[in-house]
Amino acid sequence: MAQTRGDNAAPSPPAVAAKLATVLNAEKLVMLTNIKGVLNGTVAVHDQMIAQGEGHVINVSSIYGNFPVYGAAVYGATKSAGNFLSESLRIETRGKSKVTIVKPTGVPGTGLGAGV
Image 1 (cartoon, one colour):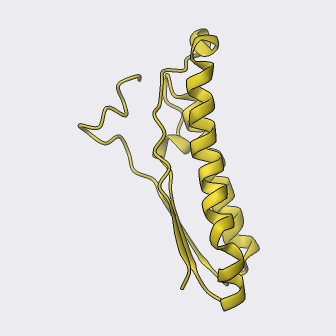
Image 2 (cartoon, rainbow, N blue to C red):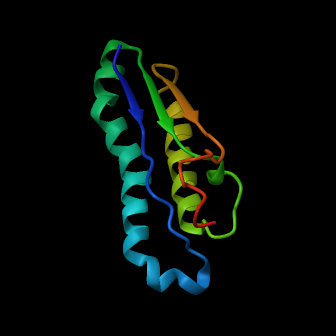
């Protein structure tokens, strides 16, 4: 069974509205990783899963994709986009593949919340 794991853990620089211009390049990396990572991983296995009639896509997101957090506007928006792509895939494959979205909260000791 074809599987993919969208382990797209991009760094999350602070991105409050007043600082958006200064963090634009870092945010581009976040967007590429969190949106295109999910999309590219899915595309890599989609046709094989449909052909064999089953498969399982597991994408890593974040709780920030569901709940806005100060300083994480762009990061949260990209995670929300990944959630939407995953949920749409679940509907569009009509049961021919499973889609799981893992949405961890802040992970102590990783520094992911340092910019928040």
